[in-house]
Length: 87
Image (cartoon, rainbow, N blue to C red; front, top):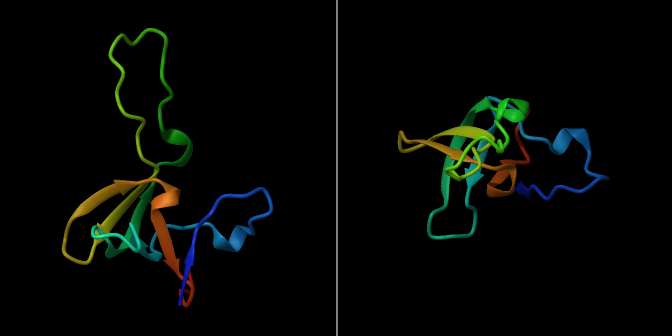
């Protein structure tokens, strides 16, 4: 059983992803892949500065090591955590 993460003000803290937790990324799409969260960039992500003239894509929050050996970077809305996980 899996739990799709939807951020709401009433969401319980236990539904928050954590480093080491098994997840599915892009669940229900052709790009779906299983993996484990290996890093949380949380508040360390830079915000856009008025000094920058080039607009880059906003950094992703999570680093996920996939079952097929890739390292991908995603946001919380891209994750589905394993409800059977103890993490």
